[in-house]
Length: 419
Image (cartoon, rainbow, N blue to C red; front, side, top):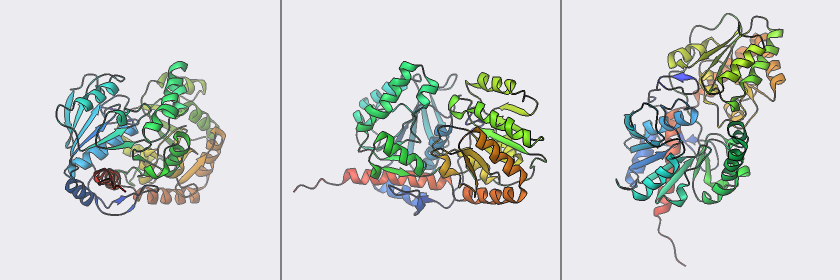
């Protein structure tokens, strides 16, 4: 089974809930249901939709982007659309599978998936889709150069420093050049959907995409996440995420060590897998923290739910996030967050209400100590975290994103006026 930000097992499609849809410049606002938006899409001739993604949900390196695409694809399929997701091959996995109502085509390697998707789109042996959704996850598919018809992009955040953290210098410079200079002019007329207002501001300012073309539709929280029994008797910190450099787990470990000097009974669990695991293990060894920091690897959805409910705080030292879905999943379980003050986090967490935003390891340690040492504050943050998460549903996310695609489809079909 796959590791999605540290969890095993494929999440099931969420049940229908009340939902909202967003406009072009602000977070999703109450509007019609997903069923109504889907009916409008079908009436407009938007039935066959393809999603292009770098990685499939089954990929060992899958994360929040893949989970987001899966949720939307499954809900759109449930609502009556014919949905296909194309991604790179999964080692040991079938090239074509059915999953929660949609079809997943997993072919080509991590790099060849980009030209192969373009070639498939140009040839269109099985006919062209009515709508194309491109997941721009660092490297774009350059769909404006080859795709015809209605298009939309999911862009969770700007990668910026991530290029230098994950690639050799030459490739990092090439990746940044593509993201910041080459790709944006091609996408100036393409609707873009991102997860948070702060990410939208970075996309507009750093990539210079037109603000009127960038919509905000927050991710949902699955209904299975909710308060329950099992809170740890002593202070416990939970961190959930892929073990990769951008998550900055060594910084988190430094903060935990500093906090434990003030809170002797503090313990921590880090859930997740990734290629930077040796670096995280080394940081724990250097700190002499192996007895109280557990590097738990991947965990099932049921185990993760239990951990969310046991923890006193969800912590993240990440440098880049489109939102931080584990923050609001934990919040739904009554666990507030102490996280870095970055784009995405500043929308997922309402500072002082559902959690605390910090700027560095020292600030994180101080915030953790303050939460652990003040029962009244901790209870207030717990209630705020639950209320923040309660406003977020995957049905709303699916409706809001589909509305953007429907609006673009109708716009493209309008006759061009001639003066």
